[in-house]
Image (cartoon, rainbow over all chains, first blue to last red; front, side, top):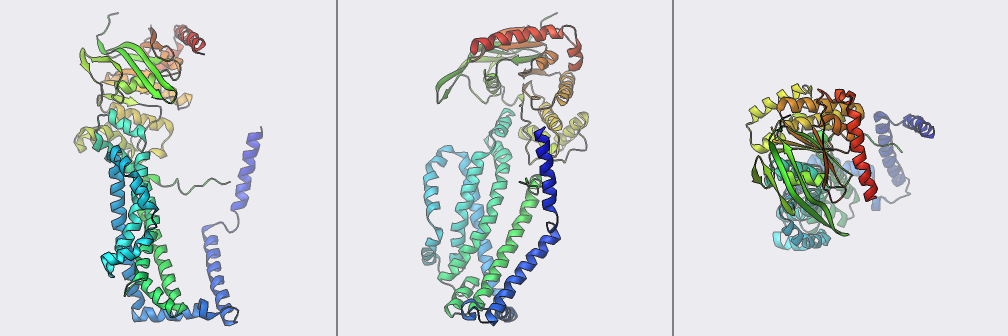
Length: 280
Length: 260
């Protein structure tokens, strides 16, 4: 029985591979070691003169600059400002885009009519709109939010429309045979089946929301992490640039897990399938 | 035996589909009648248009020509009045067992509390109490199909359209669910049309079996099954079972030779 034999082999092979560091604690340790080693090499390299502190900054310098900025309240206010712009842009863009994408399900005629326009809009790199957006919406908060919306809305629209098109036809037929009308098919079959795709775009769009906010601040602004990074880099103040970048990284990191939590709460029926992966 | 009155009659159904290879005629002048409280199985070569018949009756498709009469009245379709069950259980994955059972009552706008009470009663009757809040993916195939059956029955449909409902299940589960179905049909006084490619199942469950010819589908012959056993398992033990089985096999065999 060659089939049983190969199954057996795979089983034992998997067992062997999972041993050692492949536990939650082991992985966390390896991750911490990697981060510490990275900064240690960086710091040693700068102190020993192998790499230029002028061009790359240094971990100790970043730490002291960051500490000072936290104490002065400057970092906190810039962080909140950028976070606010990004989240506002993300929420408006994702909701508007998703609603439009879902609405296109209602009329095949309208959907076919606007499809090339959606593709055309999507193929413009939205970042290129930044100068115009600043011209239109000024140098304040609105222009950053508008840029974030332009980035996130199109992603949400395309994902929602595609998911609505792909919604299981048999489930819709079943509802129709039960006497459901178009609204009921939409709300009972189409909308719930698009939710996983829509929530999947949250992950991408949280990042795009930040991109919009930061790029908007690069172009013109008086506040925010983008402004901080841009001005500091023009003074070759690399440590301050790194403080801004690491803050953005932490922000994106936290937002990612917030989305993860939203996904778990809103899609309880999807759970447990995602934790298993076929071992090859 | 006195003939019960006709509940649903299908007359001269014709239906063609336009595919890449040109026009495909699926139904050609198809007529049959379903009596009150009938249990009719439709068997025929695969791809002969059995599902198309159901889709027309359920109002998901329109025939090119032909008429349908329900208790003597001409109707367009039985949309909203049929209980359609397919090979896939088609449970909504984001709804719990209770939510799935409530689906039809919700579309009908039945009062929530009343609907829930009825759903819990049905779930209990089918041995599924305790699973109200489980999601479909946590259930076995047999349990899922039982939930689908409850979802169908709770709407109190005029006619059950069962499209190979048990063909994806293992044999033991199938036997068990055939029994559950037969009991439910008796309890709730339902009329059933069952599409199956399982001759064994058709003989064990039905009062009549309609044999269709290959595409385009026409009624080749209608067999009355006069076993009248209390359960599908008992029916398989009946002395006449194998006789029916072999004559139906013969009908189908001749056609496969013809179409091949």
